[in-house]
Length: 545
Image 1 (cartoon, helix red, strand yellow):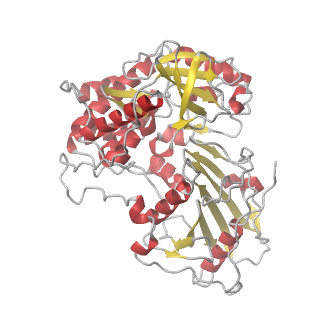
Image 2 (cartoon, one colour):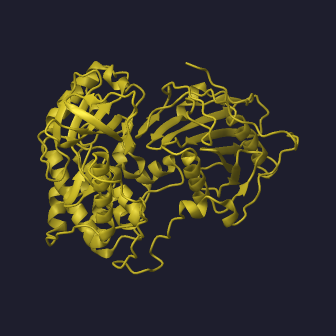
Image 3 (cartoon, one colour):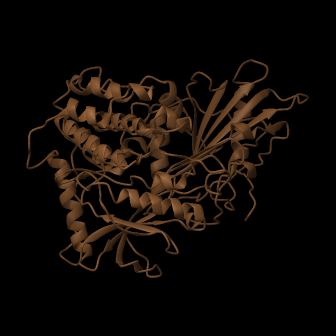
């Protein structure tokens, strides 16, 4: 929750704005107050949507359908205006953390709580599907743990950015957007196929695994590996207790027709006994903390003192080898000196030892927005934003692939393989090159993935998060001032090329994958080429808008 800047509007429709609750790919979510004092979550869409007349029409239809959804397990729609300068929708404000935040802060939920969670989600989907909507983005951040049960948010509105049945695509859809979050997408969603309500059931299954284990069943080393796991991989259910494993397996069937309906899930899961406190004590403590913070914002008392919630020890699942390993904390992974020393990046002979490391240009072009969009094929583009900040978080934007011109004269761009993703905490792009037939290059192809974490508050926070994630993905590493701030050679997986270099520079990471034309010793052929490409990728000149 962030106070509003003095320069920002204080009202949206009849709602007085109090603070920003968050922002995503479609717009901002603000805490508002109705004339009768009720609190509302007011979602205001981005200006780029507002300029599209077809979007406004779809927004209006989806809001009308959303109003017909019962508020028992959803945040009921209170009001909306599709004709405003920036269309907005207000729903009942729900006090309580998201499932994702609760698991991050208190640990996985016990089986009994997850069974109750699953019943609430299945009931919410029954209502959402009853009025002809498909959620399309059921993920832990869209599931709120209220004091009396679960609430599903953001249903129906994602549909408004799609354009089914149109003769011509609009500016919003012509690059092939896919709405959703990779770890919780269904296979048909990841492949941009037609969706049915069964897609939401697949997402429900993935959400339950996260609630039980703290991890997605399809988590990969990158977004694209995660998508491949969703489509073809076997989900990791090693930490799912036997009492729920069969239900989760049915939900995660690759064939939509093999998944249970929400109504059948209700029969399989329930009933559960009534309870005055439906969640573990640590989750109720988070609910109380949020309520106190809102009270302080409204002048009803002092802000609460921050407290550390100790994740409870799991008692419903034996601590065996089948349990997923504990994930490294930011504190444990942020300091390379505490990790095993990996193999250092070789200093190429063509770079003098006293030459300062290249630093990237800060004149960069912004890509996408927070939330999630997956774009495949040609024409991967970005939204333009020029920002420069002298602080610790060096990077603010990424280029679009068509604006990337690496200093690789022997390579040719391969735009058919480009991808662009925007996560909630920043964008990611993958750009590809091949070598020309007549060139004498040692490599056959090269791919570079840029992943950016954007600042959300304190100076340096994005760098800290990127540093922790970079360390958590490595089996060891080494600080290397010649290639960014630190780098390591990744353990190769199938289809990853002959060498893969991962580099972190401030709040940016690179993944450089090189496939050799003439196989040989990677230490003398592949690795020097990957380092050369990484240096070029960290100094990409891009055009201003």
